[in-house]
Length: 109
Image 1 (cartoon, rainbow, N blue to C red):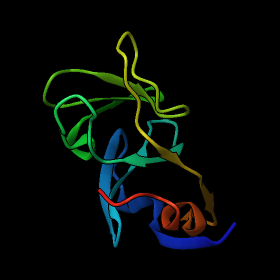
Image 2 (image 1 turned 180 degrees about the vertical axis):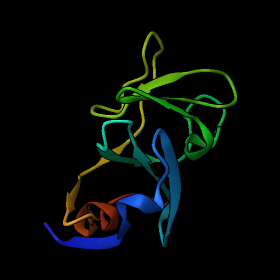
Image 3 (image 1 turned 45 degrees about the horizontal axis):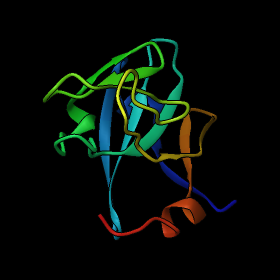
């Protein structure tokens, strides 16, 4: 894996998210109330809602437009036929690292 430092964990509020702009589209980086960090495509497959503006609860995010709920571990929508792409992330010494190889393999948004 090709880990890229994208910022400090405190740059993302508890139960919040930030948008990471890449050459291939936007990725949402989420922080749970337990300081877990997840990354996924920023666009809901239902109507394109910005997931970085959604509500983070547990290890899930709810789309702000139509309330679809996505598991941040798998990307699968709960009770719906749809999913989002998730990306490997980790935290080291308070810094968030995302797998750049996975981002490079992503299709354009």
